[in-house]
Image (cartoon, rainbow, N blue to C red; front, side, top):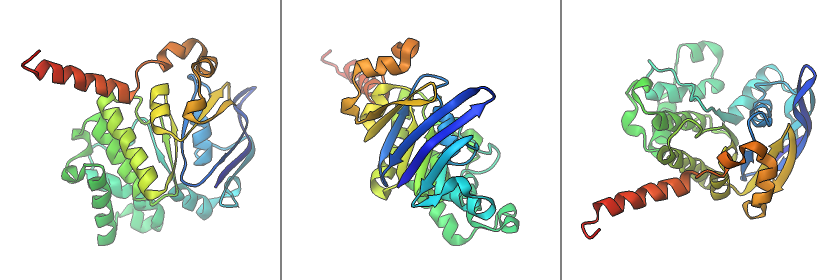
Length: 272
C-alpha cells in the first residue's frame, strides 16, 4: 500500500501541495483531477522523488520513501515508474533502445552508460512493445513515430522497469481523442493484468470516470474529493474545477472516439 501523510510542497510563500493525506491500496487505478495549478503534477513528482517534499511522509509497503537516499532512491525510481506528458524519448535512438532505457535502474553505472543490455532484457523490451501493439516499430527511430505511438513506447519503457506503481502525468493531454483512448486502454489493461497500481493525472471527467476505480480531486493543493466515479457528481466537479469546469466537462476519450466511429459508419453506409 502507498501511504501519503501530511504531504506538502512550498515554493516560497506559496504551497503547491498542502497537507495531503491518502492511502492507495495495491492494484488500484486512481485518477487525479483538478484545474491547472491544483498541485497534481507536483504530488506525482514527489511520490517519485523527482521533487522533494517540504513536509510530510510517503511510505510504500511500510518503507519510508521520503527517507531514501543514494542507492535506495535509485531503486525506488525503478519500482515507481513515471510516464510523462511529453514522452521524454530520445528521437534519434531506436524504439527498442528507448524502451531499454527503463532497465538502466537495474544496472551499475558503467554498463548502463555502455548500454550493455542482456538478451533477456531485449526480449523483455520486445514483449512490452508487443503488448502495446508497437513491436513492429522496434528498429525505427523514435522521432518517426506519431504522438500516440511515442506515448505507447514511453509506457513500454516504464513496463520494463517491472514497477509496482506507475505514475502517469497527463499522459493523454497532447494526444487526439482516438490515440488518447488507445493509451488509456493500455494503462487500464496493465493495471488489471499486472496488478500494478496506477495514479494518473487526467483532465477530462469522462476519462477519469471511465477508466478509474477511484477519483481524487485537488484544489489549491488540497484534497477536496476522494471517492468512486459514481460518487463524483457534476456539482462536485464544478466545485473542483471552478472557471475551468466547461473544459473538464468536454468530451473524454471514450465518448469522442465512439462519436467519430458512428459518424464514419454513417458516411460509409450506402443506405444513408
